Image 1: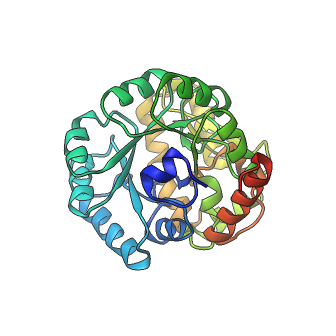
Image 2: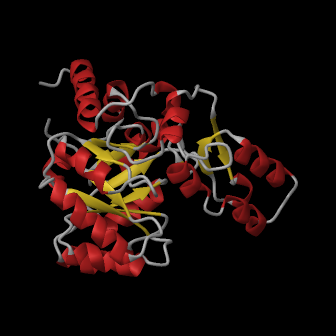
Image 3: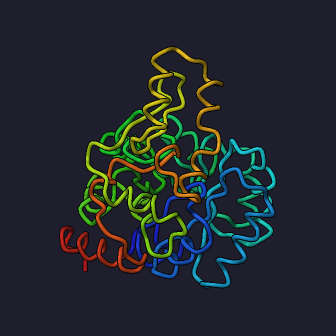
Length: 308
């Protein structure tokens, strides 16, 4: 299965794993890469040395390409930006901001830069500044989201730029991959389905919450202050939305969610923790290895698209 993205990244299948905070660590990244996709280590708010350690551990498991997601809002973004160069990483995706200030350094090191965008304007700007591809992420995805759906965003971005477009948000099977390609994408980024993979270190409670989720279990907090986050409904989201409706300040609301993603991922508190997951959670009903997931999705997409 060759596209401009598989050629660019040196991967077998046009599937990239999302760089999810607290979730995308070396076990998951290495498993996705070993299975023919591109695994990502999520930089999140981690210090540079922690990311360095994760990269080295992933390289011990697989010799396939591995990428790093650099969260630009992180206080450690400058350090992480240097670490990816020093560790010989060949692919970087970026989120929550604009990576222009690192572009020169990354390009000089031969790194492929793939920013995540939620609008046509940002996609065009990223192309102008030398991005090799963009991830057009719709609001169906888990975690921090924009306002446009994948269905509307991907074709508009694909029409606006000449670099390859990777679709993200609401994709968890071969039908989603085929649909993304019909919209103009040349690869997909998948997050929520990989959360429940056997190689994922996420707490079993978190995995089961996704596996048992229904189509209506997804909600968005933080719309009132311009920082929307998609997660699964629980006691924490109900409390958050109630306080939002009462007009509480951004600071008060932030205090409520401080450390709650880690609480859910590591401690398994799916009642008071933040269970980030996309709207696609209702379609995910089993735990599999990353290899099984990728092969199942690609077989279905290939059949639908007539790929050989």
